[in-house]
Length: 520
Image (cartoon, rainbow, N blue to C red; front, side, top):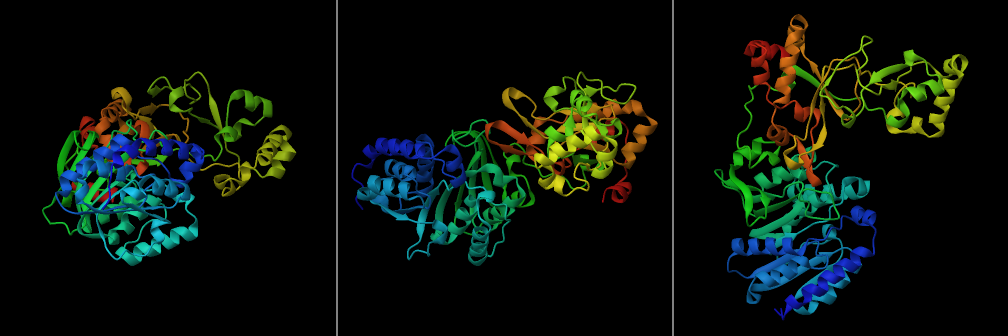
């Protein structure tokens, strides 16, 4: 195979990459999932591959070749005489033609087309390295999703959620392109490790192949400057895993020199719904351990459908003469709350500088028009802005009414960053009667805790202190993370955090029998 001096092409390739990226807007590249692999990262992954691969003839495949960054790195890290064949597939004709011009004379065969539509090759590949297109599910037409899901069901007998991104189909459908014991290295978003639609990918990695290594970059260390996404490298062989197999998990630094790592038993992975807890946490929570979900009902704050319309300040209320009985006190966003304890005024409203109110009216428009003409004008203004046609408002009767969401004594921010050692999440003790919108999670005590706090309200402070002592690591283990160090926790994820210390601190005793009665 001819590989004469491919290294000198790399500079030209990088120039072409910049030129081609410049032909599309960031929005267009986001929609098509085109995010180029940084050259140092491509070299690092192929150096790592060469150590695992050994001294064997290489039949290389990149099903999303782009301008050929991985082939360039392959040529630099593998002996030329070991590269038996190299193939790449590229959907975008501009990138396909550029790759042909760059690499065809150096031995790379380029096929222009959609990888997911290609027939299986006559000869399988033993080294697959890819950064597949990161196309989110909402950019995939419905008929395209159905085609991909049907192909996956036929090839691996796996069903996958319609929320899965295109990168999931690339990795799973490539299974049949690999020969037995072939090595695969995929650079993909780390979200599959936590989200519900990732369960099929996780099942594939634990049951259909031998998962060798998952390296996760720190969320704040986004690998793609043009995509706010947290990345992971997934390494596996196409072979059935052994029962006692351990998987290497690493975090931070490079895959060659990670900052931390651990060996995780395969059976532990199969039990875990959150893989981003590794390598920090090697345990699986005991099923009989009390969690926040056992003692709290946890709900997302109220979703209005249009905060700018439904959440008003006093000036707007006065201007539109909105009757007080159609308004409920609501807390502002976390950045506007300087204290973690919200005291209450005699009226029950929060003791904060600026009060906000939630519009919640069940009167028909005819009655509003007849009794409150200025308020009716505000309703009409909302209709002119098409707010009544939005998803949430259109499903309410009347559309300017709200879901019932009473105030909760404890709130938790559901999104935050962990830069400079800062805790990404924040608990708030709400002593007022104000409700909260959907930037918060609301914690309502269940019967045992509710009864205890009713008898001994002074113990509420102990509950709040215990909530604040939940470590960032526990949150991060259950939550999910995005590029730039952005962490997020949903009600079900918050409900899984341990609560035993909280119960002990307030002498809340719950027998196993009582737990069975109350929390099932």
